[in-house]
Every structure is written in structure tokens, then in C-alpha cells.
Image (cartoon, rainbow, N blue to C red; front, side, top):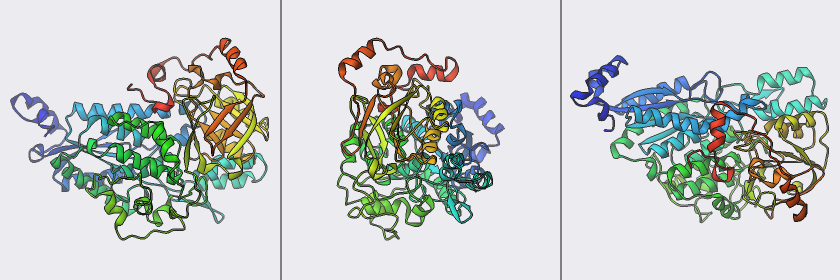
Length: 554
């Protein structure tokens, strides 16, 4: 066992003394040492209920013959960090989490890990650490929160708060109703209810085989989640005994399977960043080209909040990810048979007898739309690619031409939107919000939600070198590469320039002649870095572009 390095032999007498000080018994000293990397915190609703789940995992580890050790990793709630300087730290925290897990696991020579996670950057950060360490690991995603209810309306965090702000500003709801929606939108612990980044990544974790079947959609407050947590604690012992490591699970086939399901679900655009980063850590050759190739072969078969009224609870009731796999496997030839931590092949999951609600999970032969949920665009504005969540775009907006209205920060754009300075036909350009320029590539949920709330969702486009929350809907294109500080054309756009967006043909073009662009480039002076100290200064110096996953380990 790896842990023998800290507990076997005469020279390890001091080490054992310190381990005894933690409460380890003599009998347990010879057991497998298994870490529970817990992202519990009172600050994040997706994680505030994890104490009970920790106990279940711990029981499972001990039942399976191991010794459990809980240690903490940071967690940031994107919803709470949104719209201010806190969001600069969200994406960078992903790589920090991977570093934290790596540091503890190697320093204490743990034999294996149960990775307890739920929200946006924590899940990919944990999986990146698993791939980097390549010791037996299993992931437990805690699951979605309950749906909100207010005056017979089903609410989610996005519809009940962010979009409600725009409705209140427009006079569609009064202050009393706004307060009621605020209080009732998020009624329990768990990840926010729609197919936002947290739940998207939970679904893809299950598809890749790093968590148990049913884990992704099981409600955070359910007994089912507790049982999955217990079983995960038992199974990590088996993984250690058989030396089954992430390198045998996080393969090119399993990550491409995750891309296929992502496209079919219409998940968060952030998943592209995270799958690229996970592939990099796993040493797997996955690039934006894989997303581009598969996007022409995978129709969208599910439509959930924020693009529709149905939520993760509906997906769970419809059969969850096993039912999604049953629907896709064999009907999308590019999907391959893989095996996960459960020891069950993907084909076995897909061919098992199970309930599948075809009103929620549509057959491949009768999809929601023949378009994929996500797409990669190119053009002179984004020669290295840009990303759009097609599932959140209305059909009549798939081709759009508008006049640029430029802003060098999210705050400046938000101010203009709330003051009604953004009008129908505008293309809102928010730049200097990319991985380096932000720094940290903030999510633009506040401006996109305000645009929808003000009734401009079908009349205004928004493009950015930043990114979007999984809760974003509307004609919103992010991850524009190169970003403004790197000399990207997004930094050269001027107010009034015409911008052409053609999603079916995957094009985004600045309609300005090349001679004018080159003249502007000669006179271009990038805006100074917004943050010049601390973690973000270091992050900005080493982070890659979005098309490489905004990774720090290159």
C-alpha cells in the first residue's frame, strides 16, 4: 500500500505517533488509508449539506475495510461570487483545488480518494487531481437542490432571481413578489436546479465513469444520495485492492462519450473548458476539434432549465443519466463502450431494463432539435474558436446581424443595460474578461439575465472573451479566442461596427475590411491588467487561452 511509506518500519515511529494522535487505533493502522476530499462549507448551498454525506462515505470506507480521513478543499459559489470581483476567483479556484488535493494526497501517501463535490469548478478540479495523481479515486457529486415554489410557479435560481431583477426593473413584478421569489427560489441544499455547470459536470462525471450510476441526478437531500455515498465508500476499497486507477477510466473514448452526452443535453458551455482541462491532466488528446466534429453528429434530445421549464428533478424522474445512455448508445455510432468505477460497462448500463420517460429524454430519431446543445464558432473575430450554447438560443436568432456596443468590463455593460442604453439590434461586446484579461474569465450571467429580463432576449446578442454560466440563455457567445489582451480582434471592435453571427454555419465575423483592422491593430494598446497582486497575478501570468481549457499546467 502507498500508505506503508508513512506507517511501516522503525524509521516511521514518529509518523505513527502522529497518526495515533489523530485517533487511529492500532488495529486500523494496517488498513488502507483513504482520503475523503470534502468541499463542505457553510458558504455554498450546493455543499452545505455535505456533513451527512461525509458520514455515509466514512461508514462505507470502514465497512469495506479501510481507514477514512476527511480533509477540506476550497469551494466557491458562482452565484454568490457573480457580478463583482469575487467571480475573478471562480475559474482559477479549479486549478487551486486540483493542487490542494494533489498536495494532501501525496504528502500523506493516501492509498485512494473519495472526492466529495458538487458545484461548478470543484467537480472538474477534483477530477483533474484524480487524473494527475492516478491513484484509485471515486467521485461523489451530491446532486441538485429541490425546485422552488412561489404562488404555484416552479422556480429555479436563475428564473427566480437573476431574471426577476430585469422583470422588476421593467415593472412586470412588484417589490413584494420579487422578495417572495428571492426567498423561495432556492429551498434546500444542493446544486442549483437547472442544467447549469454544476449539474452538467455531475452528468459528465457519471458518463465518464468516475461516479456511480444514478449519482448525477439524485437529489442532494435524498436518501438515494446517502446510499450512493455509502456504496462509493465501500467501492473505493475494491478499486485500491484491484489497483483500478483513473488512467484506465479517463480515456479518449470516455471523454468523447462525455462530449456526446454534453451535446445531447445542451449543457453548460463551461463543460468545454473543463473537459479540455481534464483531458490535459489525463494525457488524452482531446481538443476543440473533437467538439466541432461531434457537434455535427449529435442532436439535442433533452431541454432543461434555463432553456425550458423542466429541471434536474424531471431528468432524475425520467431515468437520469442511465436512461440518457440507453437512448444514445447504439444510436450515435461515435459512442464507445467503456467501463467506470462501478465495474459496469456502459453498454450494460444502456441495455439494462429501466424506466425512460421519452417526453423528457427524447429518442434520437425524434430529438428536440437536430442541432447539438453546444457549438464551436470560427471567423475573423474568433480564429481560435468561440463557444455558444445553441440550446439557449431561440430559432429565429440563430442568424443575427447587429451593431457593436463595446465595454471593457462586465460592470460597464451591466450599467448600460440597466440604464436602457442597450437596444434591439445591438451586439453587446464585453472584453478584457478572458483568462488573462479578467483575470479569471468571469461569467456574464448578470448581463445576460438582465437582457432577458428586459425583454431583449431575442433582439440583442452578447459576445465576450469571458464565459457564461450554465444558467445563461439567449444569443450569447463566449470564450472568444484570442482574447483582447492577447491581441484578439475582439479588442479592436469599435462602437457601431457590424457583427454577423451564423450559428448553423458556425460563423462569427466582424464586418470590417482587413485594411481597417490592420490599421487599428497598429494603434492598439491593450488595457492594463485589472489585478496586479496575489493569486490572480500569478494565475494571469501562467494561464492558457480558453481554447486550451484555461489551464495553468502547460
